[in-house]
Amino acid sequence: MEKSLIILKPDCMAANNAGEVISRFENAGFTIVAAKMARLDSSILREHYAHVADKPFFPEIESFMSSRPVIFLVLEGEGVVQKVRDLLGPTDSAEAPAGTIRGDLGTDKMKNVVHASDSVENASIEIDRFFRSEELCAD
Ligand SMILES: Nc1ncnc2c1ncn2[C@@H]1O[C@H](COP(=O)(O)OP(=O)(O)OP(=O)(O)O)[C@@H](O)[C@H]1O
Image (cartoon, rainbow, N blue to C red; front, side):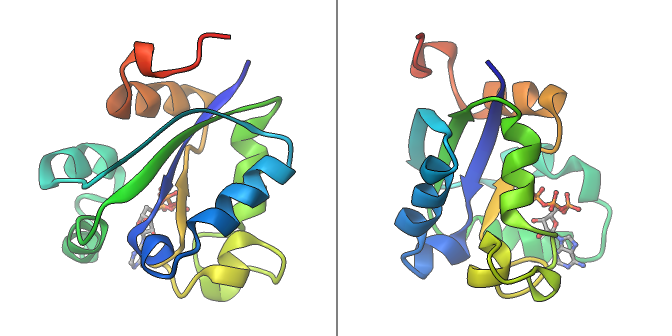
């Protein structure tokens, strides 16, 4: 079954919106097959955000994403990668329509509530980055 790696970002945690966001995922029919809370450090952020590591805003992302512990989830369900991206809305919360997670709960491009894998291939890489295989539900 298809899986996606989700991070509830520091702005989501600080605003006590974790329950609201997780409810939206569950109400959309997805199942949590792994979860943990931890603080990201520079080395893992450089790996996770390698595609934007040369952008001028990267130091700001690094500082924001390591500012407090975050929640990591693995969600499972048919078409979960694209369906979760649709639930989130576009990267820039200011452009995200009402009814999307970023539109309802986000602030801007950086404080955009949730990271979600953008392809099935990247989901597999990201799940391996943050979870050991025995931490995932087997059934
Ligand atoms: N102009 C910007 N200023 C600040 N942060 C930005 C900007 N553009 C993108 N980001 C942040 O960089 C990260 C990676 O951007 P990317 O283009 O991969 O968007 P995304 O796939 O929607 O986000 P994410 O990878 O967090 O799910 C995101 O956390 C986003 O919030």
